[in-house]
Image (cartoon, rainbow, N blue to C red; front, side, top):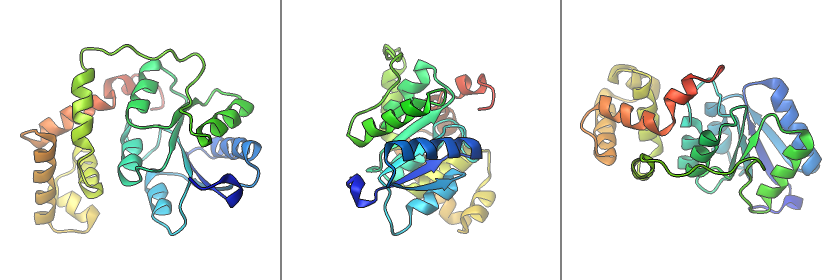
Length: 227
């Protein structure tokens, strides 16, 4: 990680301008000399991360318009595994915090936190700690924990392009539509789908979507207003 006094760069990923401003203010409180860049979507964030200048920390809202559930975190972790990603979310349920940490988040900061607490949390992560709210006590493993961990390991084997195709499959897109979005041939899409099924050890597109949907607690998120 770049030393903070060497002009580290933080990426704020949130589609709400007021909260981007609040996060920027918290970052400035913690590290006045850090360069802060903002992204309004996961797609925009990935474009910025692909640039020449590296980032040292990403602050990510789960409720983004172009992804569902933990898709955004998974994309960031898959394409940039060395980048610490801290979730900053209005959804503070212990189960969601546990899932975010299991997917490799470097911390979880509630949006309800005061600016001073946000700043302290950012400093903690930059010092190498995993930050969680003081009230978080962790979740005991349930019967599905082993299955989720196994699927997560298989999901990590997907290439960034295969992960994009899987996300589009979850949106119900056909091969023709995926090919158009990715600007590739349908034969290439079919090859990607075949590899996705093989790596996830499932037999159909439908089964792949169902199994992966279990990972991001889709049922729980649908019950949360605004997510």
